[in-house]
Image (cartoon, rainbow, N blue to C red; front, side, top):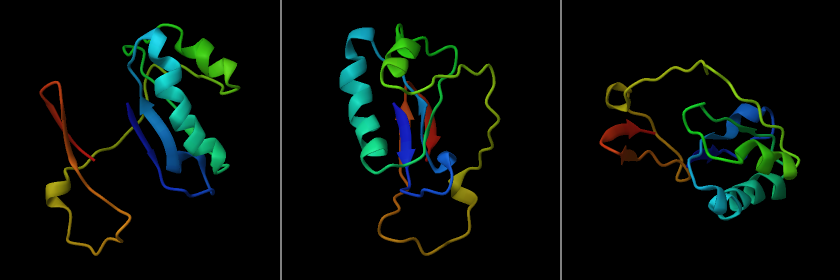
Length: 108
């Protein structure tokens, strides 16, 4: 799972799920707690997934929860290494962590 929420209500892009890979029998265990975060706070959000994730039954499960699923072939994105960012004072609620998955290093 790769997801985030900021609590902002102005635009859906501030809260969302970027990637989900799980087994069909795990969908409710994985999806429902995240949906609860968004829905209990009445937050606008998006749920995106790439074609290669391929979790069986994924679109149908989201649809059963009244969440429209749109499969995208390409999602425009931009990235920047965090090492080169200028120093900034962050609030206590912001945490930047380095993640490593399957030998791929990501910062976020």
